[in-house]
Image (cartoon, rainbow, N blue to C red):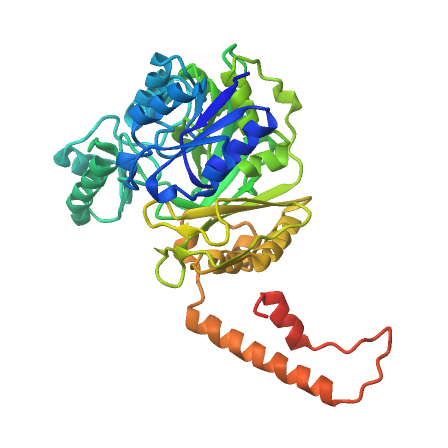
Length: 496
């Protein structure tokens, strides 16, 4: 095993990796921007070094500075987390050149799966089903002809993309030229590559992904699926494992397809193969994320496998200690991404100082967070500040536990997405598991005025009931205590 690991990331994922390293007895090195000088991951690490100003191009994306810190501190491995340089083949290659282990796949595997058009070709050759679409970068005139052949709606996707960048959904021919131009601009800005291609839109589809682990000895297993259909602008908001749409037979089919995808690029370490699952049970390759996923905790909760620790072991040259027959899904897990966004204002990112923090606890509750009281939440970076994960023996229990945990969660000083998550957990559609990638578009989210009016009315009624209880002379029966329904309603909603 390594002696010292540098974490080339920030926020809650840096803290997650630091904890896994601590449990392995490894010393750790954090890097940070000037804006993150007082961040939680800086406090947790054994050593911490500033690598530049707040903009990511001058700090967290500076390969040379990160490698330099690793050399100076004697770090023999680097974990990239997710985002930033996690899927950057040049960074993985630079680690190899410096004699430092990159905790992830090879540069060749990252490069093969990073080009979405090339990845589609590899998957077709490996017998993995892909969505009908164009195979190479298309000019505008070619795109128009291809869209007519595929049939509207179509999805424009960046060839070098991921995370929803450079994607545009087009319903009408007259909108295609403008959408192509916008997608190219966004792709160029995000990835330095403006190539795009088209895919047919699979209507009412779910976004279901398969977690895989692969060692350098040719052993590959999958850890089941995750349901990631609740998204906004192609950014996931809520994930769960397993999926209500996947039975054992379909799980085996998708798992085998994911393993074939990994074998096709000689993949090692942890990775995720993402699929679109159609209503008829057919599924299609979307992309392979050659890194740790944000939503990995739900898989850990239902399998008992610590994916980050397995990443460390695989990178250190160890064989997988799990066989496919060892993997059994137990119970149900749900994750809500806690972001510093205002759901009442079109999910606009918010910043500020955390003035109060009370994180939920109790059986089956897991919080991965970068927050602490007095912390300044910056607008320089991704708005996700924490993840709330719960486990239950059944999906119903997991939903009830998530409701309770969300109602306990208190973050003062900044606006968060928590009110949105509470409303989703209470929605009939979610409870029934009737999900697809357009769930959020169709979801009726209560306005702040409606929420405020309900809150004010309930609190007023509860206060009135309390005053009446005080004024009345009541002889309580031990078996039938007096209770105010309004009081309990207010407490249940977390308003008092």
